Length: 316
Ligand code: HPA
Ligand code: ZN
Image 1 (cartoon, rainbow, N blue to C red):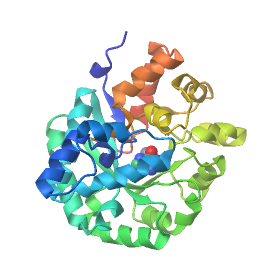
Image 2: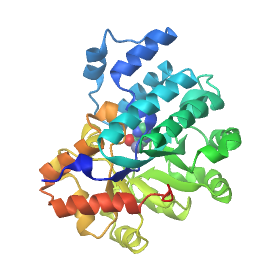
Image 3: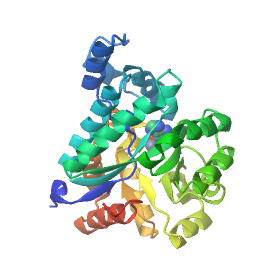
């Protein structure tokens, strides 16, 4: 049996706001005098009963209301860093959603200064933490362009851009110009696609946004030509098994497509997505799929190797 915590690995699909555990949510609510509609931490956990992505997103955005100061963003990222280090994560490329904060009146520099300070401290403890700025796809492309502009003073503090939030009805093609702009700035590009949305969204992410990794990508398996393309170009899929279970993307973990992805020759990685909401950090995800899909230790080693090979940042 593998000792997963002893195996250096990368995490490539992690939303920092999704690492906001109920305990920290309550502590920050108290510190900032924010009223939460829950009596206690247990009541928060009891509310995490989702039947689709949007159910989760509604609570996820509501939870961000407790994040107000740079110290709050620092505390959030340090909490994640500690859990990741305990799991043997040596490098994480973490998403954050600036629009979820700037739209509440929190300045961009507050977000960056808290997260960047945490990244510096994590590095001293053996975890390099890079940031990927995500655009919220339920908002307009003009808002995404303004967000990219507002982040330019902090260009050295993030490595890439991503696309998240409500997928269906918000195809990647809606964000073609902002991704083109990001590419010109030398930013790496990723997008959530094929979590709930059709294979067509994965094609668009590749062909119209120029992404180098696909976040989730489950539904790509419905399209043989797309699978061939992902294999040919060795496009990594950042798969999140416990997230897929909790958001009903799969009915059960033993029906998870991860084994089929591996057998199709795809570069698959295992990640936790929003661990505070989905019941597990990255090693919990490895263990869950190993058990449910009967993966061998060799398969787990391959997944770990793929995580390291799929990093954008390797010179740390
Ligand atoms: N999917 C889409 N948007 C998100 C997610 C997710 O799993 N987590 C945070 N924002
Ligand atoms: Zn995600």
